[in-house]
Image 1 (cartoon, rainbow, N blue to C red):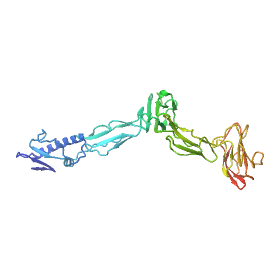
Image 2 (image 1 turned 120 degrees about the horizontal axis):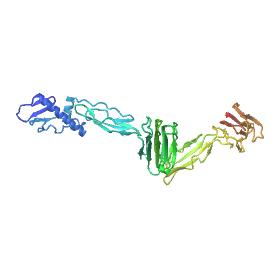
Image 3 (image 1 turned 30 degrees about the horizontal axis):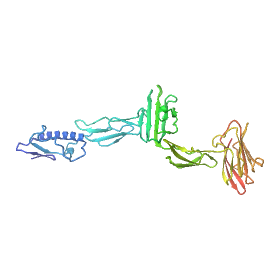
Length: 427
């Protein structure tokens, strides 16, 4: 019986023992054969398990009178095999696995919007030179795609690098029947008027074009009424740019938004969900304060339409405090219109006539026959104006030419009279 390192070799006959050099040669052959078998079976992690009978006593690789017991645990530390080189990580991708020894496996995937080109798994192979079973894969943004996912990313070809010329790319999104699709633009840059993105509600043959876009401004979101959206991207023969990144998701009703100069209470978008709206002080709600998401066959929409908040021309203010705004504030007030609503406590009247000047008149009383306590035509205003009674009348006159943002006034009751704070005036 002879010991070689930690490995035990037995002779089953009185035949003279093998010489040391012959034993080492046999061991090396068995190690190589054993690891090649294990990497094929992917059992390289089973440290300590017997190597399959690749070095059987009757094998041509060893002498017929020799038996042996070898294991992965016994051979690995003795011969110290070299690892494969680090293959890297694909751009716009990910890798699972950080061991590069013989038989180790690495798995690759791509970020949303990209497709993996190449092997998703590679294995470190044994042999005289350690190599991976396949080259490092790539993550590519293709020209066109088709998806049935409920959410994801669509990218222009080669994104974020420049797309190619003379291409027509078709992207199709199809979700559950009855659902709509929200389209949000994360980035957008194409040659204006030449490289054009078209978004269709359903297939293009339906001729329901939702939006046609080109240039460098990031578009606002789009919501389909059908469960299919088709995106068509056409490029010409000349200039190319970085293209687009689009995020899509499914909902029933579209986002009703939040009105300018107002607020919204509620975020539900499924059938039966209700949201409420209200306006900031000084603004009036134009539309219903409550809307509901409803379903009619395979379409979802809000009933009634979402409201808006406007600064009205004229109105009655009966509270002990509040705000008074010029029409459309903070946007420019309109030209050449007449509007009058009689006052109760505080009255705002807007009178739009031509020509020449825009004026704000303030009267100490219920109408324009009351004493005039303020007349303004520029931005020079006193901090405060007080009435001597519990009513105040305001009249605003604009001509037919230039208009500005107007005024923003705050009023407060003070005993039996009113105090008017002139916050802003621009006419």
